[in-house]
Amino acid sequence: AQKVTQAQTEISVVEKEDVTLDCVYETRDTTYYLFWYKQPPSGELVFLIRRNSFDEQNEISGRYSWNFQKSTSSFNFTITASQVVDSAVYFCALSEAQAVDSNYQLIWGAGTKLIIKP
Amino acid sequence: GAVVSQHPSRVICKSGTSVKIECRSLDFQATTMFWYRQFPKQSLMLMATSNEGSKATYEQGVEKDKFLINHASLTLSTLTVTSAHPEDSSFYICSATQDFSGNTIYFGEGSWLTVV
Image 1 (spheres, chains in turn blue, orange):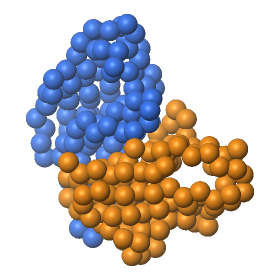
Image 2 (tube, chains in turn green, orange):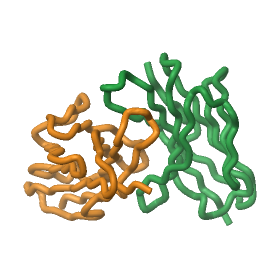
Image 3 (cartoon, one colour):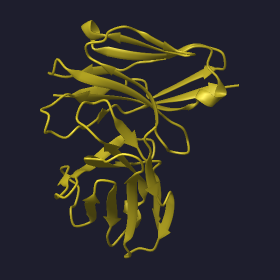
Image 4 (cartoon, chains in turn brown, blue):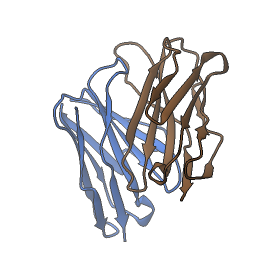
């Protein structure tokens, strides 16, 4: 069964600290996509990254970095030198690549609320 | 880039009335649109999947007659909450995709519904 687990319900750090948000997934497919979204208090979802299962290279985008480890089925997200504006709920999501005529759905983790204190 | 627009962003309605939320793909044709509901401090819950021109596929536990979804064109899907009750108050968000490759999926801004 497909499943995404974000075990950390809430993380609180002081500004400028580094913080890692964990994401562990379960899937039977060999081809799948992993996503991270940010949801600030206003509610809208902000796309951060999409990674397909064949690309295990870690990615860095500014202060954000992602560590994809297929061996442990994890796709962790690290914010370096955190800022107050990073405060939000972060969701990890999984999509399996089904048959071409199937619908494309996201399986969501429960989300991690990140609080950055000034 | 592609944009999905939801309207209204906030709506307050009286119990017993119906309210319609629109989800539009502004610069692409959305073959599939998804409607999610999010309770406070919880993750997104998929309500239904709609393909243009066909009936929506509802997730288990979602009442079809209460949450009417219409996907009349490749750029517009609507969610109508019928005979709304205070427990329907929630954040509703749509997403749209134009292909099945997993490369393109876009979310609307979300709609806050408050039933009083």
